[in-house]
Image 1 (cartoon, rainbow, N blue to C red):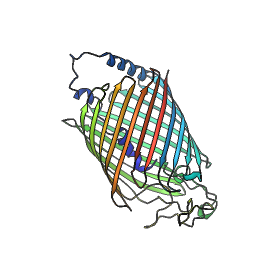
Image 2: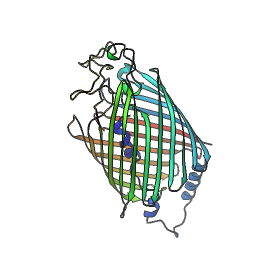
Image 3: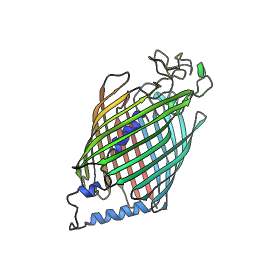
Image 4: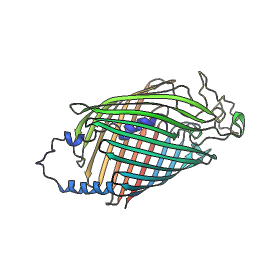
Length: 395
């Protein structure tokens, strides 16, 4: 998925929620004299069961986007995950997925098979961690190693700090995701693309008086691939939020929130190019022989270098976001988020930025749960949408 979405979707689908413990502290109904309802008792039982049981998950993701033959990449991902409760606060998990990468009109399709192992835990109320690593084998006869780590620390009841580090595949085009092997041109017989994103980041949230909070994050990293030079990038963002409603988790509307966010990122080189591995000729016609496009792979002031991923020298977005979540009933939980604002990036005039995400968690029984999420946005030069569904079976 595109770089512009990776950090934006954290806010779009999950972004800037009330700080842990905030809903109980700000709810005017909370108090020692308020009677406990049967719904709350059942909710507590369900939470205890979910937090103390192991599970298996069926995984399904479908991603689609706009763009020409080079830039557009749709993919279908499916697989399974085992979550093993190793200790009361520690889960070990194993994930296996298969991803089918599809170009426009299926001109050139590839696939990747990935395996990941990880562990997540919360040793104390103030500290949580997650560590994982794995490998992916592509149909282009190449493999990659991916990894991720995150550490969350709560210095006080009103603050939250986190550190992250990751190495992941860049799924923005077929070139950047699985790579292409041209039969002619400067890369004849060699793999081009299969770009990896290596980054570190840090951020935090601070709860302010009057249901306000402030959040900030930043980071840096590089992207590099086969016959694609390393490209340094940096990013930063922050904003302020206001919880209009912050109630108990089991209420129909437990959170209604408005926030403003400013985000920035920038690359040293523009690598949204396909020279030497393009599926189109200079005139925009479909290539007859891979590698015979005659386009230079080297970046210049007027032409992007080969890489196949969105990498402007400067990207800035200003958005206002509204979020709502709640539980209309014991078997249903939802979360909605929408944003609108402006975005500008190198080589383009300022334009509107907009997006929406919706998540539903259907608790069919105590053992079976179905989380479904859909999101769509237009960050950067293209629009993209993703449907994600899981079937969770606890045992």
